Amino acid sequence: GQNIDQPTEMTATEGAIVQINCTYQTSGFNGLFWYQQHAGEAPTFLSYNVLDGLEEKGRFSSFLSRSKGYSYLLLKELQMKDSASYLCAVKDSNYQLIWGAGTKLIIKP
Amino acid sequence: SQTIHQWPATLVQPVGSPLSLECTVEGTSNPNLYWYRQAAGRGLQLLFYSVGIGQISSEVPQNLSASRPQDRQFILSSKKLLLSDSGFYLCAWSATGRDTGELFFGEGSRLTVL
Image (tube, rainbow over all chains, first blue to last red; front, top):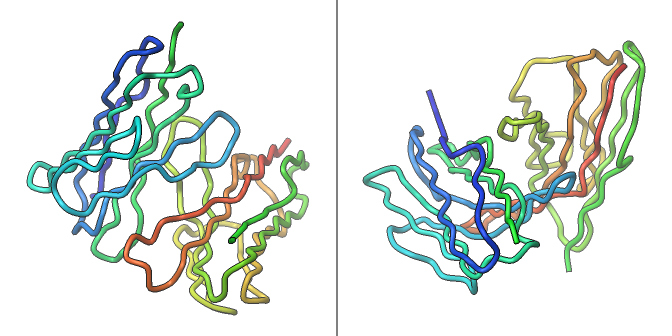
């Protein structure tokens, strides 16, 4: 079966750095997405990785290792507004998105 | 610029009543359209997707149905709601022919079936 694993919840301090991991087992791979979702709102796109390596976009970076079936989202200089759920999703061989359950990130002052 | 809207934002319905959620996209043509359901603590579940007018693919057998009467309109319906239909419903679109296939989501509709 297809599976996306990410921690259920993480806590971090304002101004710090946090890394949210995602491991996947899918039938084929055509890219990995990270989305941010604030409570009660729709997900918004953060990043897309299809090749191995690190993609940096401001305070957010996303890393991919296809051989390990592993990705992480790195958030730097955390702000209170970063409190949200972070969803990992993989596009499989049929170009269908398989979604993880999301990681709820709690930022404390 | 492209926008997506879905409504209503919130609704409370009795068991056995009908449902109609509507979604429209503006600023693009021939989008791929999707209906997802999100249950608490679980990943997004794809319900239906459409690559063109009248073309609907169902991912999960259930008492819901979808229709695409116009290029940029996607409707989710039910004739008789069940308690298990409660959840957060999200409409989304993606552009055809793009490498990333990034999804853009509507605001969401929270359905409570009592």
